[in-house]
Length: 139
Image 1: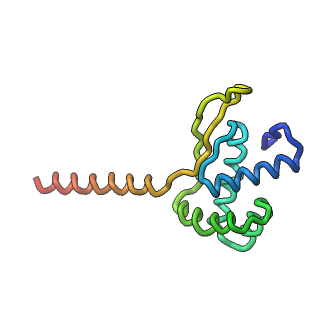
Image 2: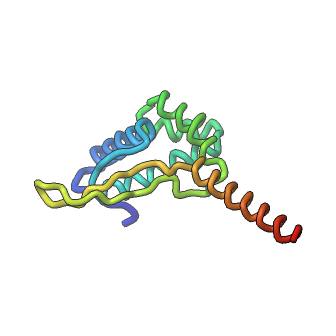
Image 3: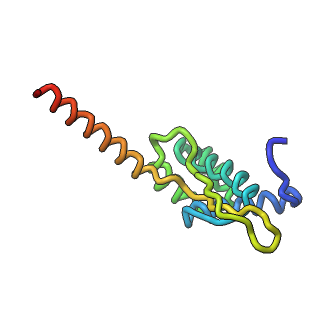
């Protein structure tokens, strides 16, 4: 199968994934179990991809998945789509936190990747390479 059942029936699982996806978009980070995070990551990436397309069909698909939550869909299409316009995927990252005390299941933090910081670092590296090349040419 292409997905994990997570010990729930179809309606409960889809509702849970939609709710967790909304929380990731709103808060930009959640703490959950490892298996849930891996499933939610797929949904979040798909929603951001819809936002990057930006057409009416994509907006309606996102609204249908997220239970007609217009505020979340607006944030995806306006803010997150612009933030990740130069990125081709991998909008989330999973950081392992440790085991939960009660049932010893692995807890992780699922959060959105900070795109702006990476771009700034790349620009700094390019600028430093340019200055070092100019210095070598002057010598």
